[in-house]
Image (cartoon, rainbow, N blue to C red; front, side):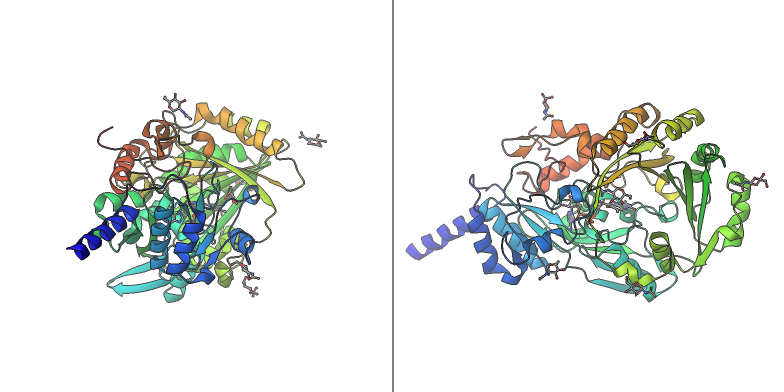
Length: 520
Ligand SMILES: Cc1cc2nc3c(=O)[nH]c(=O)nc-3n(C[C@H](O)[C@H](O)[C@H](O)COP(=O)(O)OP(=O)(O)OC[C@H]3O[C@@H](n4cnc5c(N)ncnc54)[C@H](O)[C@@H]3O)c2cc1C
Ligand SMILES: *[C@@H]1O[C@H](CO)[C@@H](O)[C@H](O)[C@H]1NC(C)=O
Ligand SMILES: *[C@@H]1O[C@H](CO)[C@@H](O)[C@H](O)[C@H]1NC(C)=O
Ligand SMILES: *[C@@H]1O[C@H](CO)[C@@H](O)[C@H](O)[C@H]1NC(C)=O
Ligand SMILES: *[C@@H]1O[C@H](CO)[C@@H](O)[C@H](O)[C@H]1NC(C)=O
Ligand SMILES: *[C@@H]1O[C@H](CO)[C@@H](O)[C@H](O)[C@H]1NC(C)=O
Ligand SMILES: *[C@@H]1O[C@H](CO)[C@@H](O)[C@H](O)[C@H]1NC(C)=O
């Protein structure tokens, strides 16, 4: 009887320690690290001041703005899903929150820093990065979150020159964060976003349980993790992807037009043309200084696309001399490095960390008038601190998938999105570049999508709103301000899923999905 009582008591203690309602009021960093060392190899735990904490911390920081004073109590470089489970359980038991980092590209650094005073540790997935390709008539890949898109592209391209995966351009992007926010890239008009091609996943939830499949997590949660933003629903450790078919020869075209050569007319016309070109061609524009660079990936041979370009966008005078034919894998290298050295896609080093950035985004549903483009060139692109605009056409498959199919709502009717990129280097004051991006964004307000003014979750921007925490839970109401911009009418469904899987808001950051509880 006494023994039974003891067992029951022990069970009760265990349950309350790990149950989702328990978060001690005073965080215990010491207790957390103690708990971790009992559960995972100590060489994977880095505390400030200990060997190489800074080296590991900065290893994937891409933005110098966030290099200074980091308040993480430790970094855990997990190599197995069970380590993630231990971090969640130890975190919950000791009142320590987790910031999850895969590739570290978050525009506001939220995968490794907290803007609010919170006791947190960084769970770094960079070394959890296996990629396995399987075939059963169709082709699939299981990819761990810490792999980069460059590693994924390289593995697929070496397996077959006729397989590919639609995702972002920069090779160092982490799979974990990139897929958590959608994944736009140069094949989205033909094959959709990355998340439109995710068919299964494994996730560690807020109780530290490993949900090993889509069936185990349920359709709502599986829907939410495919674009509903990182951090909110748990730690995705692995994703199953549907690979897509590409021809063994693709074409990269790069054509630039200066103001004198008619850049304003070409960009104005491009707005109507690019979203309605055949799905196999994606033509983005980089607008900077006095010129616009039209960069295309065409899934086919040069001579097949030239007649279409000649009739649809004669302003570019595209000829065979503008074409570079190569394999799809080589195109991934070429677009980034200007050469076809595909080994460089595996390089994870960030290069020199001497750049500071602030980026913002918009979606355009009604073409911007020619006069406005002229004004952008004259008043913003030729001034001190001026930056870069990147225009990514939608239409094709990405535009025809229903807005509620995944959390990414910017589908039917979107012509293209704009990314405003302001950058400066260490010596310069940041003010000119910051003023530039904010004043251009203000000016553009009247010319882009409205109510809500849409933004892309993967181009995180804390200017559009931050969560407010009341009684230790992020409030739904305050989050709608930024939530509707990123997710449109999908925001409420995301918050409802969050309310079911993490009602006490353990996984959170300044822009995580707040729990919407049925009692609200
Ligand atoms: C140079 C550059 C180029 C880019 N190009 C593109 C592009 O072409 N297309 C595009 O769509 N986007 C692009 N982006 C944006 C990019 O998709 C996002 O920044 C994305 O979140 C990066 O993923 P990450 O794993 O590298 O980032 P991280 O900083 O590691 O994570 C981003 C967010 O996701 C969370 N998170 C990370 N891993 C997990 C996980 N396993 N489970 C749950 N949550 C997680 C983090 O906590 C954080 O909130 C670019 C960014 C940069 C800096
Ligand atoms: C520190 O960590 C970084 C990133 O993991 C690694 O590249 C570097 O070799 C490490 N340095 C030492 C001295 O261990
Ligand atoms: C802003 O966008 C540019 C171009 O894609 C990118 O190089 C840079 O890293 C981005 N900024 C941040 C804050 O990551
Ligand atoms: C494009 O072609 C037209 C007609 O052939 C020609 O008049 C024009 O100068 C060309 N423009 C450029 C920038 O090459
Ligand atoms: C290709 O890139 C790799 C990795 O960046 C580099 O080591 C190698 O020297 C490059 N090869 C050539 C031929 O440039
Ligand atoms: C940019 O700044 C420099 C130095 O402050 C100044 O001489 C120059 O006139 C400025 N140029 C423009 C276009 O504002
Ligand atoms: C949150 O919403 C309330 C109610 O609308 C508002 O009064 C408050 O200012 C908001 N707080 C923040 C930080 O946005």
